[in-house]
Amino acid sequence: MESIIVIDRIENIVELFGSFDENVKIIENEYAVSVVERDSQLKISGAIENVDKAKKVIENLLSLMNKGEHISEQNVRYCISLVNDGNEEKIEQLAGDCICITSKGKPVKPKTLGQKKYCQAIKDNIITIGVGPAGTGKTYLAVAMAVTAFRSGEVNRIILTRPAVEAGEKLGFLPGDLQSKVDPYLRPLYDALFEMLGAETYHKYVERGNIEVAPLAYMRGRTLDDSFIILDEAQNTTREQMKMFLTRLGFNSKMVINGDITQIDLPNGTKSGLKESIRILKNINEITCVNFSERDVVRHKLVQDIIRAYERNVEEAKRKNGENKSDYH
Image (tube, rainbow, N blue to C red; front, side, top):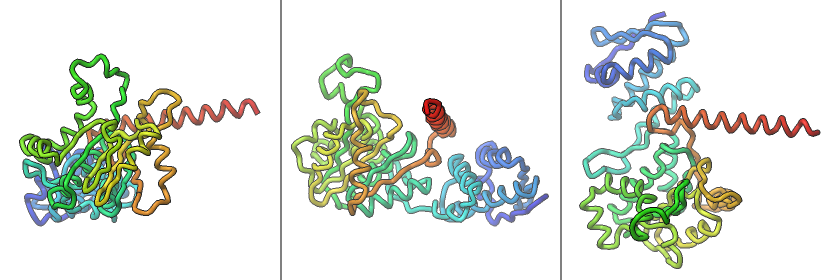
């Protein structure tokens, strides 16, 4: 079967195909079709069902382009996953508003439906809990939302914190004073702030006290008014630390709590404060939890594959464990 798509703008063809035709090759490999451009037309050839799906992906990518979205490998793969699930009508929702402009003028936008839901939740609630695997943009988008709130005068301070829990390493063996020992744990937060504000502006706001990046222990005994507070790697908080953090909330403040409950580095037998807080706080107004899946991963495709492989391994272990238990009954 063959199907034709007429392209109105020649520049759309260039962006759709991508460097060395990498975008179109992803579509061709996914659906075993051939996509050829000739005289501002795309001809898609292959099995009927596959041609239909490939056409839906391409038409939706063109629609995103017409709304000002840049097309990348991540966009292409995400559109494919939505079409394969029969959710292609949701693709147009990806043409979201810019939530922040980086120091280099790059717009920051949600790239998946999960990310869009997360950003909206932060706008609509006082406390937002983001739970999901690495690479879903939890920290990056939270920092972008914080910078936007700070620039618009909604808050006077940005406070970023995370627990200094060793992921197989010991703080005592690191060189330097306490601050230099905990800095490696805070590096992802620094990186996101540097990108949004630029290093010079960041240091200026730190000196003025408008921005604070510190370990969670530094939050004890404080009340945080007029602040946008982000707790990162929250899966590594104890129940006591989480309660302490949550009760720091002051007037005219927002909190974003992020974590991945599959990557808990706490000692054996210690319960994660994040897991407990999700259960305890679920019915409180103006507190919401957003769950990300591997489809919201916006890093290299292999990161999605790795997460899926680990999830399959966990499910297999649970199934085998269940079978073993049933042997005793």
